[in-house]
Length: 258
Image 1: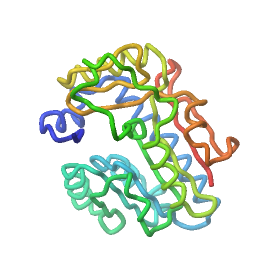
Image 2: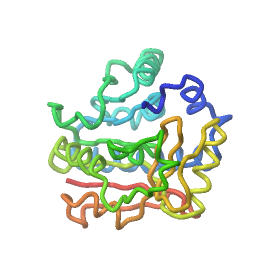
Image 3: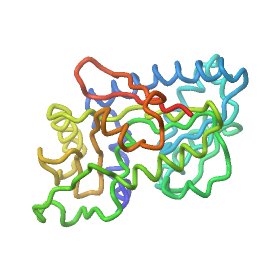
């Protein structure tokens, strides 16, 4: 089941009339921090960066980066991937309309298959809660609600495999940036549920779960620092840093250095 197989849900996912204020503000909070990261890496490398954007969506990040010449000049190339054909088509169209398709290239590929990717990058981005979408391959959206069983996310092999593969794609000194991930608390869970319901979806999880899922195929995990460090067991803890994106424990950004 794909998150964007439903056309109405796909359109509402980008329509600010259907997005909660917390989601909208998280977009801008992660973008502010992301610009700092790009500037840091550029100053360190002394050369334009090779960037990979996992789950490029509607090319929002590339669009806004390209609107600031001082930042866009720090970008040498910008590859984007998505596992939804609708997102690939939309982001390619956006790049063409903005005339940034000389730098921005978009590919239809699932993140789980990036172990075969041949390129190396200075910066790999996973923005706007996409990292929380990497659900276990055996998860059933059809039966989870009625099964009565709760999913133990002490480990998430899908998440760990994807990030291990991404870490291998970094140049020495490069970084992975998880632009925004939900913090695991009850207030955030309620905000997630409200957001999905506002888009017209049916929530199939409860307060006993550390993720929120819908019968339409949306799945987003909540995290704390300890869980991130446990999942990224192949990275030494001192190379993982956390930045709060708000004052109400809704979301954080994670930077992972190589």
